[in-house]
Length: 137
Image (tube, rainbow, N blue to C red):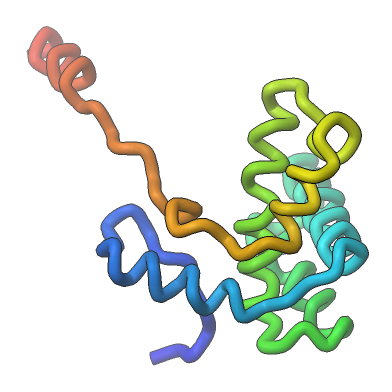
């Protein structure tokens, strides 16, 4: 079994999610470290989208960055950056630049403890999907 940190998946229990968040919160980042690491992740992701790199490249690049910045263990630090970026990216997808428009909220995403709900996944409402499947039969 690998000792690498892996974010809990959809089927993880609330206890598993809370334990993962507790581990993620042990990683203390500066704003500069977060921005450099996340910037590298996004640039690498663009290369993946162009077909230049494999799908795993962004997280591998982020882990290498963390190791080089003495953010150890690098796999845990990379996951912490990834999770902390989520609300920033969500806001950006809604045309809101947290850094420019809500700097306090932006800094909280990076510097404050990750909230207990950070790894909650939306419940899938399969009702409508199941109805469509029934109509196809």
